[in-house]
Image 1 (cartoon, rainbow, N blue to C red):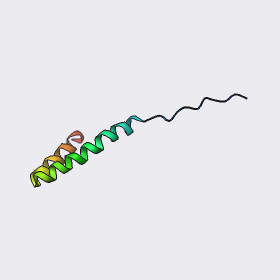
Image 2: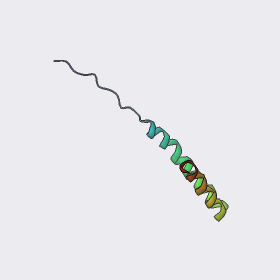
Image 3: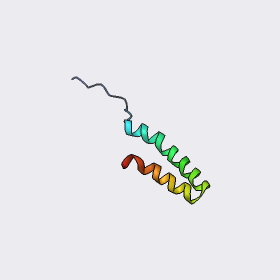
Image 4: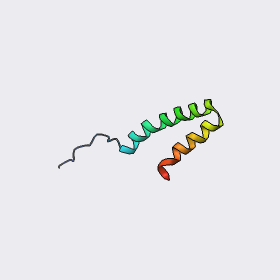
Length: 52
């Protein structure tokens, strides 16, 4: 009987991107909140820029 070798758990690229993007987004939101209303608008514009 032949067995296929067990592959170690692989990390998807999306997991790596999220592990970097999520902390940066939280830090950015904190900075935007400390600046005030105009900071929140700038943060939202920055987050939406890749989708425009």
